[in-house]
Amino acid sequence: MAWFKDWFNTEYYHILYSDRDFQEAEIFIKKLSQYNALPPHSSIIDLACGKGRHSYFLHHLGYDVLGVDLSEESIAFAKKEFTNNGLAFDVHDMRDELYPNVVSQKVDAVYNLFTSFGYFDDEQDDRKVFASVHHALNEGGIFVLDFLNEKWVQNTLVPEATIHKGGIDFHIQKRIENEHVIKDIRFRDQGQDFHYFEKVKLHTIEQIQAYAQEFGFERKAIWGDYHLSNFDLETSPRAINLFIKSK
Image 1 (spheres, one colour):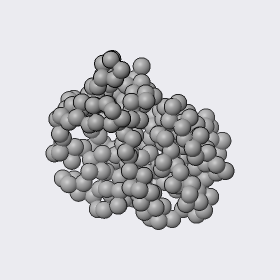
Image 2 (tube, one colour):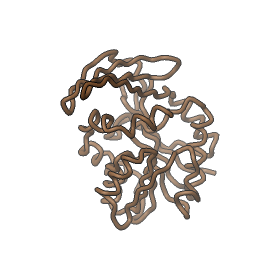
Image 3 (cartoon, helix red, strand yellow):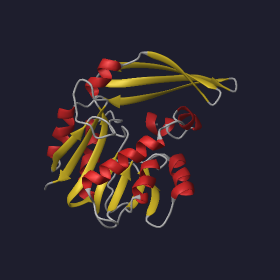
Image 4 (tube, helix red, strand yellow):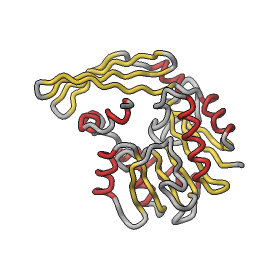
């Protein structure tokens, strides 16, 4: 089983990341929506939506949103908490075609947020994501790919840390190996030892741009954080790419 399908479906993943910042997500979505200026009821896919926080804020701004994620547990939570008229959720692997598998009509935008890319060992799987998004978008449609800034990761990596959450001490070790950042997560709960890991490919902005051009996207903007500040290769924690389907 792929690491992300195993780890993302555990209760411990949600315990470790229980303090994800909803206010930051709301500010980000508002700024992004103001920039993109999509009309009300535009159709948006939140690709790899997790528990649906970005989907919720997009819908709150008046868009018709479908959140999709590989994690059955996350989708079950999102359906229970957020499903509404114009806001729906479904289990979906981002490597598989969105259109016509999960949407019957092409959409105006696809958002892939909070480092929900770079999980795959096979480069062809990365290409499948771009191909699927391209096929699902209307002409001139928007693709937002919110990824980490690989240079910043290399400059700021903290090799070891312990995080206490939900009565559990999560011992975290990080390293860069073969152009991936790898996070080992070890902890003990109810007398049992656990070990999970996260592995994300350190795509450069040039590599992401090459994928985009290969599949008919033009980069219109790149920002360095969730306030849409200008991107700086050395100091920006994020590389938030705005692409337009150009052909």
